Image 1 (spheres, rainbow, N blue to C red):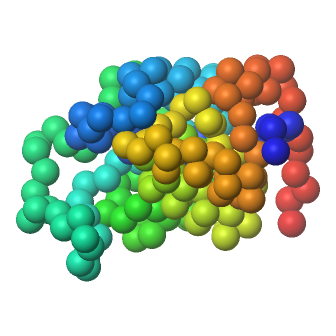
Image 2: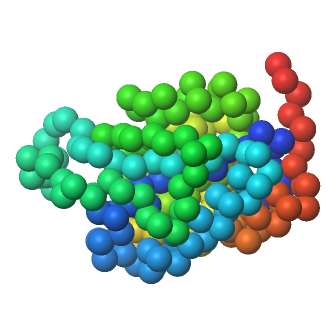
Amino acid sequence: MPVTKLDSRTALIIVDLQKGIAAFPCSHPVGEVAKRAGDMAAAFRAHDLPVVLVNVTGVAPGRTEHGHPSGAFPPDFAELMQELNVQPSDHLVSKRTWGAFTGTDLQSYLESSGATQVVVCGVATSIGVESTARQAHELGLNVTLVVDAMTDVSAEAHANSLERIFPRLGETGTAQEIIGLIDSGRQVHVNEG
């Protein structure tokens, strides 16, 4: 469903747009994805809305067919991309799993900020972004996914998330549509329970 509105307390969650992940070959240029995410972050900040920057700093325990080396990453692996223009008001979430909620303070941060909706973007579409969106949906948050501010190492996985999964989780739109809704004041006030 195309994006129609944003709640008055909508938070932006940017997933894994960091140096180590940006080095992987992706189906869409990561620099362009990061630029769009950075533009949205600037709009959210200008309207005093929460911006959450997520990075991955390790791997979850357990075996997978894509075994990971010892879990040691290069020193700048988790450093967020310059295009995000990190600000002191941003909330940083470092994770070791696919989704940004597991083992982090993200849920409590969103609750304390009064957020009732999240706008999610980043990399990889089918892993970090989708997992975070699923968790937000399960927590009862309204979810919007920014289709031109995300990418994946697999074009097929990216398309599957966009075509089959995201329509079941919430609304989808472009970065410019999200910025337009914020700048035009097309946010709806949600009754506080």
